[in-house]
Structures are given as structure tokens and as C-alpha cells.
Image 1 (spheres, chains in turn red, yellow):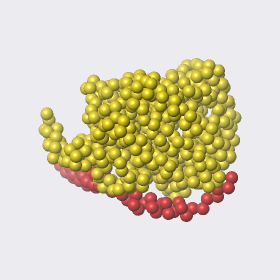
Image 2: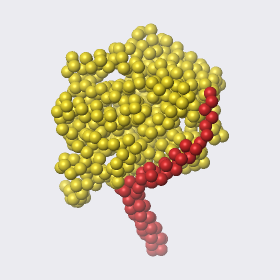
Image 3: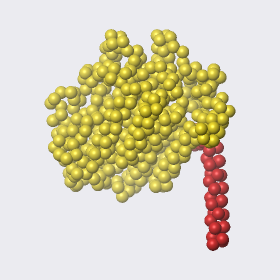
Amino acid sequence: MKKALKFVLKLLGKLSLAGLIAFVVTFAIYMTNAENKIIYYVVRPLLNKHYDSQVRDRRI
Amino acid sequence: MKLTDKLIKAVDKKLERFDPLWQAENGVGGLRSRYYDKTGVAKYREWRGVKDTFYDYTQWLYNLMSMGQMVASAPVKCLRGFWEYRWMGSYLGTFMFIDRLFEGYRGYELRIAHMNMHAIVQSLTKKIALVLANDRRFGGGPLTDRMVPMDEVLPPLFMAGFKDLIPIPLQTLPEFIICDIDQHIEPYYIDVAESYGLPADVCSRCAAETGVTIDDAFPIIGKAFLSTNMPCNASESTSMFQRRRVNLPYQPVTMAMIHNEPGAHPYSTQELKNAIAFIEKEYGVKYDWNALFERAKQMNEQNTIELEKWDFFKTPYSALVGIAETLYRLYSWASVNGQEDYFTKNDRKVIAIMRKAYEEKYKPFSGKTRHRAFLWGPSAVYYTDFPTWIQNCWGINIVLNMDSTMGHNMISTTDPEQAIKDLALFSEKAVMRHHAVGGWDNVNAVWEWARNFNCDMVLCNDNVACKGMNGVHALLEEQARDLGFHFIFIEHDLEDSRTVSRQDMRKCVNNYMSVVLGEQPLDPTIVEFDDSAAY
């Protein structure tokens, strides 16, 4: 019984810690607007470069 | 007061100098202060106080999860979609788009705005995954032949009678919604169309649709296509390009334009019957009226709630405001059209909050609204956050938009013959058909709407390439003067931000508010700014 309780408490502790870390990381990304900066300055320019190099058959 | 409330209040007081609304009130900055010049990229997210910032964060997480689910549901096809279609890359701007839309929102209006926005995001992400997973360009999928591509200005509710088929508004994903998110996407497609020889003075939306067609950027789905006459002659032209390029058997569902005429309804009813017969023949399925009635019940409930919302809009105590109302109604009506239960459930929750806010005499935007405006005419798709800007800058609350007045008649849920007649009327009053075309009486109805919603101001979108609406410009100006409304014509080029920029649009309002009305802006940092490089 004691062993099971200890296991549950340990698991809860680990889950809480993981939750806290996840919150800190995602909230930091959110507050610093990091995902939008990466998309705007890195991802989209690379994608646009690819789109501009595409060859399209535009004959109708 | 609870201890947590006291604590939050203390933190809010301590951090209030980071709140852009506080900064504007105290002359030390404002909503534009946190942006890098031109790009629309914010250095950090808006501080709205502890509760509202945390709420905004949780909604950001929800939307992020919806996008994660989209990719997880069809990872290879989604990645191929990003690689193949330029418009897919633009969807990466969604988070920036949502941030722009709800700047300055707090309390109840922020909650409702996010509830509505998440409804759109969860629906749209599922739809994108569904279409890409079954796109013939990527080898097709199990549902490819059960999908029915149809013109997005044709309300898909009548298709609910085909319970095993999936109607997909063809232009919504690659052309329309994406222009809301990224102002730079459509100029590319417009250039494709013009380089092919299409004149440069047509409606930019039609030009963009044609460009998407010629660029082979429409996903290929379904066995037959329902096109429509759409609400203007330029649209008819692009419809022809699309059906040639898509190259599927097609049926043009040509709804009556002058829908006030009594003879229009039997004609439109017959058009819908023809469309049903066409789908039955092409897909080898039978129409099921009971399946239609089930979805019509959802649409009727949504419209019943919508009419109750209108009663709140007439007061200063509506917690549903501006773009949170406009964009949601446009998407939930034109694209979802009673087919997704999520929207009915969302409406029930939203109306409950609206009732509560009304009982509390809650005024949105901290009661800073100075004018109540009715927005008329098709809005610039590349400046979706215009209603947010005009409230934050000049205190003009757009209480209702022309497009929100679309078909709100109830559909019979027991009698097939009556149901199809109701659907015809409903479809005649679809996006743009209801007021922007269909005769002078429908255009001129703006004054009655504005008066009924207790507006002192009418904002009229002036699509510079819309030949039909250009003809009524002077007449509307005269009417406004006669009837005593503050009236601003806002020039725009619908989907081409190069012709009339967002700043040019703001200038129309700035000039009227400062020169004619002699008012001071609520936030001087957003009167004039360069967002030409922003999505």
C-alpha cells in the first residue's frame, strides 16, 4: 500500500514537473513572440525561395 | 475579495506600464510601440493584465494544438501541401493574424473573440487536412470521389441531403481565407492572371481566383463541380476559367440576382433542383430529405441565436464586437452553413456570455467607444483587422457588417417542397448577393440597417475595381448628407494591397475624423504607420 502510494506521489511529482517545464517553455515562446519571429525571418523566406523556383505549366 | 483576486490586482498594477492601452492613455506609447517597423512582427506579445494575458495564452495553445492535429492526421500529404502550394506557406502567418485581430481586446469581448476564432481554426485545419489527404495531385485518397467541389459563394447547406458526400467550397482554402491572413499572397496570383492576358482593372478577387486556377494551385478533388454565376460579371469570367482548368463535369447554379422580384424565387428553386439532379446523376446517389432536415435544424438554431445577437448589437452592451463578429459570421455562414455541430455549440456558449454581459451592463473596450458604425460593401480582404484598428484608434465600434446580414430565414424541417423554396431564398441572400448586387433597393438598404442598429455612422467600403458599386458612390454620399449620418468611403482594392495600401485605407478615416469631426485619436501610435511588409 505504502509502496503504491509512494509510486503515485512520485508519478504526480514527475507529471507536475513536466507540466511546469512545458508551461515555462510555451509561455516563454508565447510572450517573446518567438514562433512568429522564426516563421517571418527564417521559415517563410526559405519557403518563398522554393515557391519562386517552381516551374508551372500555365497553358490553358 | 478573494486573496487570488487581490494578488492579481497587485500584479496588474505593478505591470500596467506594459499594457499598450495604459501607455496610450498616459501618452507613453501605445499599440504600435511593440512592433518592428513595417514587418508587423511584434517584439513581444501584448500585455493585457494577468487574467486576459493568461487567457490569450491558453487560446494560443488551443490553436497550436489544432494545427498540430492537422499535420498529425495526414503528415505526408500536409508536408507535400506546404511544398506544392504557395498559399499553404501563408497559413504559417495564422498566429500573427490572430494577434492582430484582437489587439486591445479585454474581458468578455476577448473571451468571445477567441471562442469564435477557435471555432474557425479547428474547422479550417480539419478541412485543410481533409482536402490535402484526398488531393489527386498527391495521389488522391479514400474520400476523393465523395467530395464535391463547389463555388464558395454558393451556400452548401442544400448539399446536406447527400449524406455520403462532402461539399468543399473550392476557393475558400487556397484563395479567400488566405488573403485574410497574408496580404502578400494574392498579388502573386493576380500577376499570374494578368501575365496571361487578363485585364488589370477587374475585381482583384476574380483575378486572384483566375491566377490560382492557371497556377494549378487548386487541389483536385471530386467527380463533378458546381459552379455559380456568382455575384458579379468578373466573377462569372473567373468561374469559366476555373471550370475549364479543373476539367470536371460541371453544373452552373445560376441563382437570381434581382431577388426582390417575386418571379426570382421559383427560378432559383428550379436551379437548386437542377443542381441536385446533376449531383445524383454524376455521383450515383439519391437525395435524402431527412438528412437535409437534420442539418437545417442546426442552421435554424444558429440563425435564431444570430437574431438574438442582433438585439444585443443594438445596445452599447454587446460583448461580441467588430471583427470577432464579422469573421465568424462570414465563415460559419458561408463555409460551414449548418454542417458542423461545433458551431451550434459555440453559438450557445457565446449567447450565454452575451446575456450575462448585458445583465451586467458591460461595455466593451472599457467604454471607450465614441461612434457606432454600420460597415457596408465588401470589405478589403487584405485588411481583416481594420475593424480592430478603427476601434482602437478612433473609438469607432463596427456593430454589424453587411455580410453578416446574409440569409437568416428559417428552413422547413418537415416539408421537402417548402424546404427547397426556403433554401432558394436563403441562397439568394448569400455573400455579396444579398446587398452588394441585386438592385438599388438592396444597396440602399444600408440606412435602414444603420438606423435599426442605432448607428450614427456608416462606413462604406469602396472596392475601386467593383464596377457595379462605383456607380452608386455619389448617390450614397448624397443620401448620407440628407439623412444626417457620419459617412466615410474607404477605398480599397479588395485583394490587392499594392493598389490601395492599408495605410491608404486608414488615411480615409484619419482625414474624416480629424478634419471633419475634429476628434483626437485614442492611440496616436496607430494613426499613421507602415505595415507594408506585414503579413
